[in-house]
Image (cartoon, rainbow, N blue to C red; front, side, top):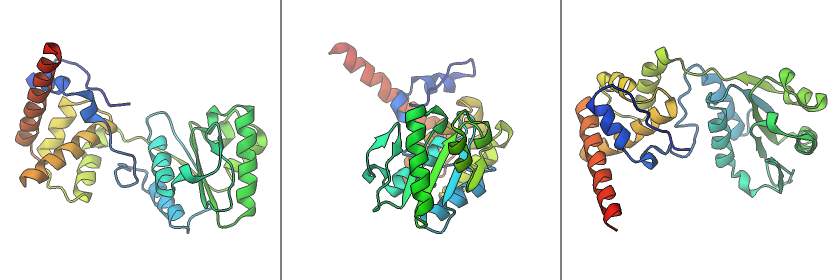
Length: 248
């Protein structure tokens, strides 16, 4: 889902932000590189190890909605091209000897059929030491309403609790993310974004990525004036697009 710009009486620049087409804020494809880890550095490191075939055989990640668990599992699935795996039952892929890494998101949603498929997959992976399984849920294994044998297997390896980035830590996390990308960021820009845009990391990161591309094309640093300029251009483009649509 595209991140939405919510309304509010926070000045004329927010009005421009509300006029930006929603698809402009479509987050980039999830990767481990564009995940802002905050206090979850160990989780990302473990997933990198799994992708490099040197990590634990089983990894389970749990956290509340919006904590980033689906971002991480989608990133891992994309990296290992999970679509090349066998037939799936409720998102649970069947075991295939040519596949090394398996990903199952939101296991707490599985019904009896899905749990049976996951149980079979867990057993197959346990018997093949060179394979890995990464799963996620909204709760730790012991608290999930799943079959006992499935819950036990979810805890066979490493279990990580994702800690959402607190609003008080968002500025630091965004600066670290931008600088890791090699972007020249004015600290005032982040403070400005946090008062003019929704305080969810998906929206903030997508705006920062789009602004970074805009800045690179003009060989400029990421500053508040640049953000205002970008917002004005996008708003003007949206306004012109609306006129063409109404005249069609």
